[in-house]
Length: 202
Image 1 (cartoon, rainbow, N blue to C red):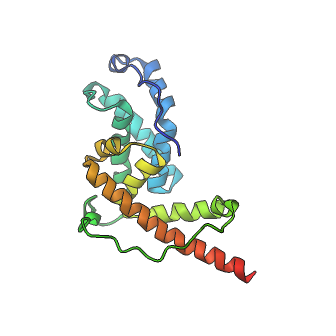
Image 2 (cartoon, rainbow, N blue to C red):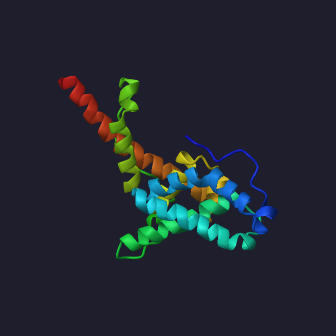
Image 3 (cartoon, helix red, strand yellow):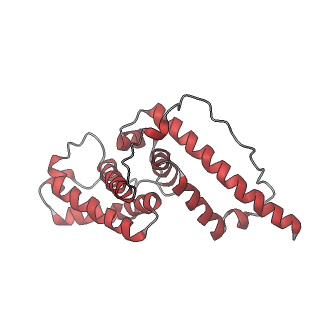
């Protein structure tokens, strides 16, 4: 898992002054993480590239409005998240809300039967096919769960940072992350059960 860079943020004063070298450093430091967020949310390299470009264009245009209450990286994630959501809305005929999928989130989740993966060889767990299945399972998550999972478990943001990006409480972030992990575990359980069955039949 790749985490948010630990280096200090680029000088905000230099960015606000229009220092292009400082902005180039900001782009260099964050573009891989922003692209990874976009590709996990959208699944399309061209759309992810567009989100990446729009994120930094908007950051450049609005850096003077940045108040510094969050980190620059959190601010960039917020811009990128909004851009990715706009792409998702354009793909679907109906407008969706991040909160629509969260109705009844205070209820207990009924877990499915979970396969024991202990006997699968490590190369099976890390195979390209398994990674593709995981990516597909992530793409099937409701957008509200997908965003939290990608930001927390793939991008490595903290619960607090994820809440700042999505304007959620820590409790809401933890609840949605738990639900996302459960859904992914159930999806992957089916996949690995099939793989184990094939191995037994071979």
